[in-house]
Image 1 (cartoon, helix red, strand yellow):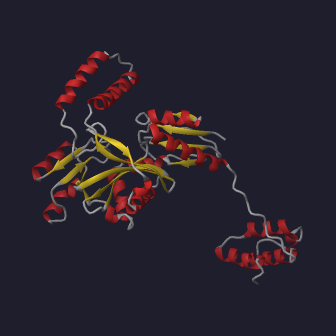
Image 2 (image 1 turned 60 degrees about the horizontal axis):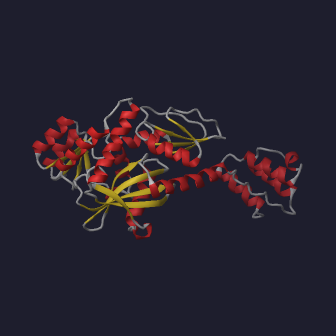
Length: 362
């Protein structure tokens, strides 16, 4: 049995860190796992459906569908448990009709179906803004949410394992450090030589010109940072919505960007299948994955068949109930006879009949 983590170019930094911490194989290309292997898919990018053998955490097909943010919104809005937590949205081709019919109201936000971070974001206050956003590539529009507090809630197999909220971080050192790391990583991947003194000088100038913090796009490169919050102090409605969102888009784990408005109403923004992790957040995922891998590697214990004094008589009666084995098979012994019977079951009614017989209810 081999356990591996599959990541893409955009998620390889955290993917490699998880692989090293878990002491498992890390790969950038599509793996070919065996039937009993475990594959963790960390934000992998694919352009079509794939079939993978073995046990999968975050199937690549679910990740691909979730990467299309418009389609993910449609899935979540269709879930009656989430409908009220998804801000109204509409494809670009229908936005003007919705505005004219007073079903959408300014301000609205234009987005691309595939976006990452604060990219592909257009705040629209009038028709001219909408037309320009469409010309620039907006695929859909969503009603603006009056966010008071924005969170990232980490959900793993139906449970919240960690949570942070976004707080202002107008700090030159952290602002430039983030961009310096991005530049360095890009240069290394593309074998480009850079002059560190030049990079630092340019970043200092850029910081002076930046309008921070950005009140519309609360990302770590727009003057915000994550601050840990107690899971116990998160509103139950927000936690439940985050857990439901991950399940609805077909993922096993994800970092859910969500928010509370002035009325403390929960809103789901999107699910991230390969978030950047470090520090405590990375430790939480390592712990969650380690426990899950152990559980997946442990064979499921089969309960021992119930021995009764009726023995072969009960087994033979069960065979008659399903009509798929014979009394000779049951007469070989109580346990073997029961196995023969259960293997012969084909319908729920037959299963109930056998259980009733074995429990002495008939």
